[in-house]
Length: 76
Image (cartoon, rainbow, N blue to C red):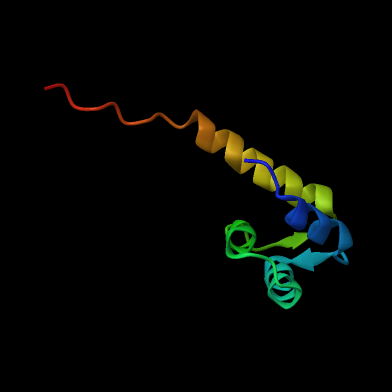
């Protein structure tokens, strides 16, 4: 998962510290798309000290999801 340029600019322009609710409120106000807002909504509820902290969380989640085993198709 890579951040969209819009989400990256949004995170860079946020004032920190910010909670997930702060991020979601500002994202809606700024008109971020539903996919970007969904990524923010999936963040753990906590206070984030900087944009890198959020980028790290999103990258980590993407990495873990990439390691998840996929279901193999059933043999016929």
